[in-house]
Image 1 (cartoon, rainbow, N blue to C red):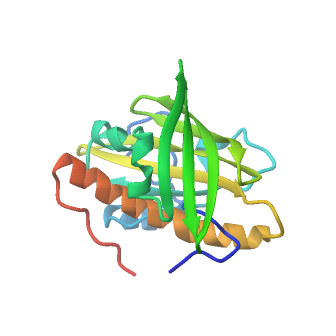
Image 2: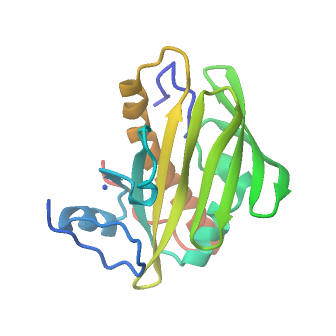
Length: 207
């Protein structure tokens, strides 16, 4: 299913349950954790990783990856691998680097129209990659990837995105599309992680 025509992108009960091995870990209820254990991406009600952010609507989802933090990191930190798991992305090229960050040129092709934009990424090895839009076709975009070690050699991968394409596209339409696309991106990146590390693909998500 293609994105809505105005959206050129690719781009969790009260009982908290969390076996994660991290101090700033997100929490899930029993039903959410059961879905994660089945290999399903789970939308989060909020992003605990971006509590200081104000005035922006983030869509956040998580997926339990049956692989080590190191192997997950090898894909998440590979900026030029993004077209292999981000729908409609045709270009991801590192164009500049300095201590603590890299600048990545992205190209998207949606409904025969091309979009270009440049994103600044701030990686913290085996923990997170924060990114923000520097310039390009869209009004604003920022978010990140967070990695949390889980017992059994697994990794909870959290992906969060705020996106404003500009123009007259309603915010509710943007949010609705992101709530579909972000879980799909998590499923796709999981396949890439498993393939790169030589493991069989994780369980197919039930629909």
